[in-house]
Length: 400
Image 1: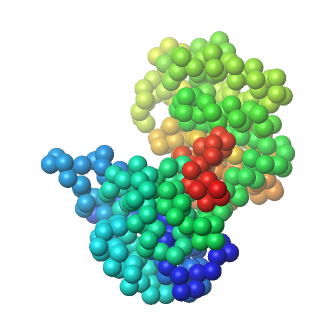
Image 2: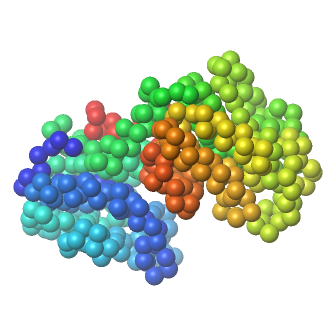
Image 3: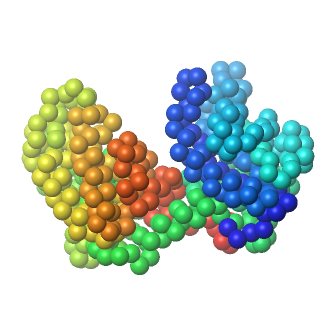
């Protein structure tokens, strides 16, 4: 961020899409804290900051009379906490580009912070509308995108607005720079062997990622519900485990491609199976390819934990995206916990580790291991698309 901020008004797109409890208290402020270094740097350099963010999907959750549920989706809920974190008062504009935003941004002095109302209160935001974006741009001298979690969206505040600033007056914030730099460590010239751990429920959600990873990883570990589509494709009996029947041919193609590329592909040898999708279901451990009728695999078993751990500890670079089981239920959380511990242990031995994707991030955070891995990504969908090799509109708008 080598721009000159002194006496400049800086429009900063942040990702303050944070969770609340019933009383609108923030339950996880990770995303807000992630943006603090960028905000503080601009203020320290003598600039003023105009913050904009979305919160939820207000236009998809209208009140019965068709109006916006402002109380649920207003960014005003963040003002007190953000003021506390920054150690200075944060002003709030009750619109995004309207009279209040324009008057308050015009009056902004160096060292002051203004938070605009939810960008998604206007349908022009998600449409990437140029007029809407131009009005945003008119409030500031410089545009900084620090919202990696929204970089895959071609919205007005994440992409179109950048078109109204030249290369000397736009850039990435520290959070965005970090996300890109760390993802690039895995994508370009990683220390080898490179192990990718991919989990989650469905193969269909991760097809592009799996196809891309097979081209450049040394070890591919597959867990979670998606593993049973592979196990069944290879002739295994998986009971009533989650299987995407229309993806078994694709699974076999991926297995064959891994073989041709010399990639070690690991599926869970055994599983924790249950007779019901519930935390208090009856459970047993059995071979993943020999699950009895009426039972379903909901976590990886002890043999799989050992095999996955051995591969992870042998890696010099590690990418982890997706849980190994239904980790929200304590009975089926062990596999995901074991992988988190193995990734942390490998990092301690000198490996570079990138954890991306909401559930994997939640797992390392809940276990208190977030500071024992190299980098935890804040952008679930954006990180997934970046790793798939897609050009993210929010990045392209700055880089050109």
